[in-house]
Image 1 (cartoon, rainbow, N blue to C red):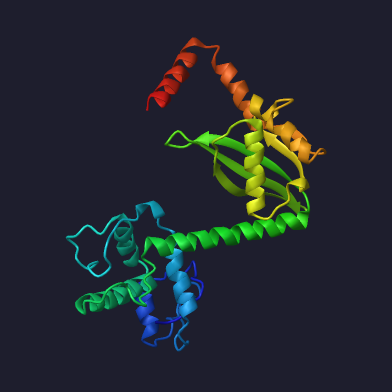
Image 2 (spheres, helix red, strand yellow):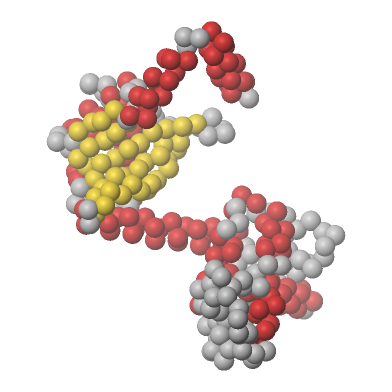
Length: 287
């Protein structure tokens, strides 16, 4: 295997180009751009190879995992599950992934022929456990970077709202807004399942989410929500509970929600438009 460098946009990273340089030939004159693929004579760099494989794996939806064996990937008549089928497809256009897949299949077939139990020391990056762990690690790294930036700003505001998923379960998105180096930043830090939509419940949900990423809720100087009673209520709303912890924080009624209310009220006037949106709403509730 040869080491990889960042791929050039002007020179395609094709198998033909890869083989061309692997055999020791120089890049032909007159070709646009500068080759940024594997360099001839470079030592093997397993970290870069592994990173390239992980990048490709993480582009595949984790929900496509299925029980499948790597040893019989070459069998085109067998259903390998959505995930492995997508990996096989991507390997036709990615040299590093193609060679990794072939190497894994050879080792897996060898273990299978020797009646070896388990996977041993074979690292395939094709297990849903491995991919789940990689995604979790990436998530933790992203959150730690966001936490570092927010702590540098020393103050932040929070935006949160809920929406229902396909299982009709409320999911709360928590976004932080802060300023660093004169630039306004908005970062999603968490999506939490909301089982208590009361003002105090939303407050506890936010506090737990901030504690999990290592942020102090007392540094919150403002919040933006919709105009629902559980959010803007004077006594038991989310804003009033947040003010108990951070008395100086300011509430802003989200302008997107205000605009949505204006449009909703406007569309109720024409009868045909009102009937149309009523039908759409009924269909959404039914399905």
